[in-house]
Length: 106
Image (cartoon, rainbow, N blue to C red; front, side, top):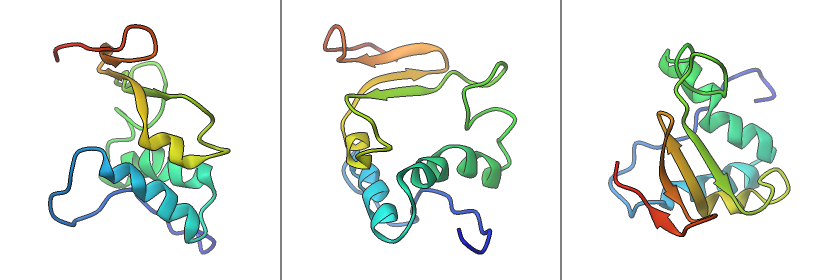
């Protein structure tokens, strides 16, 4: 990051249990990224490096409405991203344990 190289969140490792990929945020911070830089690696940087920045990576008009929510401030404690409580995919709520505790059909 200091040299201006964009880093994207993700791995080419084999299969692991659903949700474990979020543990990568803490590893990225442990190895020198700020929590915000780790979040950007999973959002705007990943979208840019995949060539999808016109569709995903930020909350902006015309982009897919893919949003998550957690209890806490991930800039203060990036590990809260390991416990996602709300998911909106393409504008449709697919998980909402903030208000109902339910997961809706996709």
